Image (cartoon, rainbow, N blue to C red; front, top):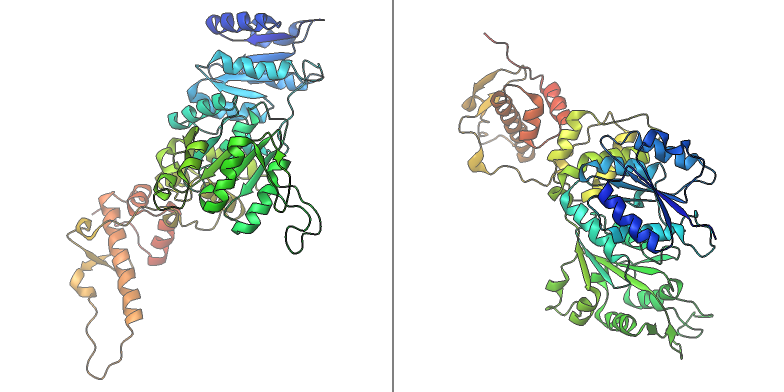
Length: 481
């Protein structure tokens, strides 16, 4: 039988030597190709290509495009440097089977190649079957340039090879489900189902029947039998999302499944054996819930064989430009938008915001911008930064007139009403708030020499919001005398 051949294109000699030795030991032939522009001048075609993306990624990505145009398409595994996350994303969009950040563990790359070169059908060039629930956002790479996320990427890739439970922790919207799908995509179960269950979406009784199913007559209305999610996930993986919301009595049954790989349906008389890899996620701090009796400590230790904590977006702001580009490309067509990129002032405001809703909030903001780019997105509402304390307010305040001039602060004080006069506290409060707002805006503009971008950042509002306020108040930069 002819050996499947793997081309190592642009791979350095040290990595190539290691891969060649290990692949040859597995019965695969290896060719080292250094001249990228002439890769496909050869007579024969490989079963797989390992492509090292150097410098700007070109002409390496041209090799990837040519590989996808071949009949049948040739699987390509891409190697990138840590600063090339954007190129890695582009490579996956162009059809790369996998991507790894250098330096890499040869075992990880070897496993990826073995998946490509050895499948059940004996077709060496066939790609592994992906999880049918995967979408474009669940590509084989993280959209990230931060060291924290790249470290998580490497851990997840290693963990995926085993069947140990994984507990993913992090705030809402950080990408826990994307990481769970990444782990499933890189596991030996990738061609089987990944079944997701939201433990917070159903009451206790309904969640039990959803997870473990029921037999006929188990309760009123159970006119037939129904398999549970664990049965549907047999030979695959199950994602228990928001597991921190699961009732303690149900946690005991889940612990039994994790330990013995078997359970009984509601109303059932027999044990059901399953082979399921469990991934759990939550935004709750489970270690704080254990002393309160809200979460079983034995279940926590059973689930957290591998624990991965995803940092919030505010702690990895270097990812924001990459994520913006990713979401623009992902949603542009569906939103019928022609916007190719965001204006620099908007990106600046994105970088300034704390994003309490994390990546999910950023994605929703991009979607709204694609639909209504002319509207003020009020990024000050996105930022969770508190306003400056009173002790940081400027010592010298001004009352700003409609024309943009200044007067002494006492000239804008509202007089107290006379004995027979009525007063509207709501109107006074509104007027005073706007007057204080104008004074602060004018003060910050003076401090920043009327640099509106810097002023907007100091004021914790977006650039467009500041321009709207200046237009409303007819506030203009004073002419130099």
